[in-house]
Image 1 (cartoon, rainbow, N blue to C red):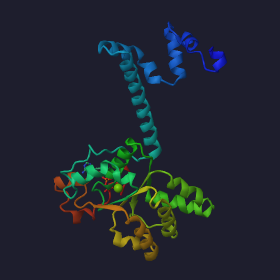
Image 2 (cartoon, rainbow, N blue to C red):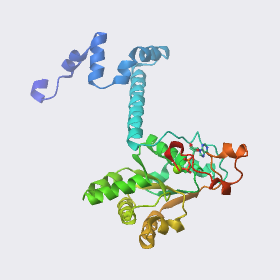
Image 3 (tube, protein in one colour):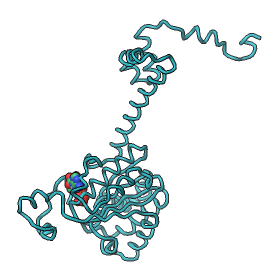
Image 4 (cartoon, rainbow, N blue to C red):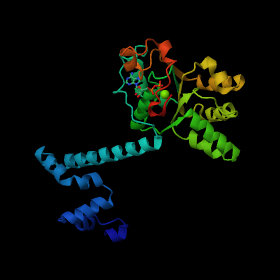
Length: 287
Ligand code: ADP
Ligand code: MG
């Protein structure tokens, strides 16, 4: 039976339409149309490499696809990194464990697998200023992005003031859903500065919304026992912690500020107790 009668496309005709030769320009256009831009941009090199490796057609096709996927992954990660709004670039490779003996490198490596993000767990990074909490938060956030999770970074101050403003303008719902949608929300530097009067209630609403849905990473210079004071409301702080600590990992970083270690070395300051009397350096806007 002819293809017209069966309603099936005529495979011979299909082949005739797409059979080469095509000019370099036509091929370029086809690759552009298919959005195969990595193959298009590196075509000569890729084909030369495939010939050098004596790949057969199927292997060569897989090799080209791999080049395209690598470029698309790179773009996706770059886009997700900019959406995350990290304040600066910090990586786990750039973290010196010798400078921070209170941390277990094995535990950080385990966190870097992002299983805790997949599970929707909470991570609390607690400790005094300058010990690397923000560095680790950003570095773990970047690991999560590179593993395909959506991440959002925000300072505690900005988060609370944004929610408070939205609350006054009856736009709280849309703000809460904006902070609720990423798989990991990093809230940096809770407890450094006094919070707005409504902070505890707003924070509670956010945490309730994310509870058992998405992960939260919080850094704070105050131990959880003092969060009643931080929020100015013991009852609501307890309710917040009840949810946060249900599935959680708590890392308490101890020791001296990394920022001030040069000053310590030069004998300008002596101990971590002396550090508190020195004004903050203000590096990168952190306390
Ligand atoms: P915190 O958030 O605890 O106040 P930061 O993470 O902001 O401290 O650290 C202050 C500065 O010192 C940052 O520039 C950070 O990259 C750097 N830093 C802190 N600890 C380390 C470390 N162990 N290895 C490398 N850099 C560090
Ligand atoms: Mg910090």
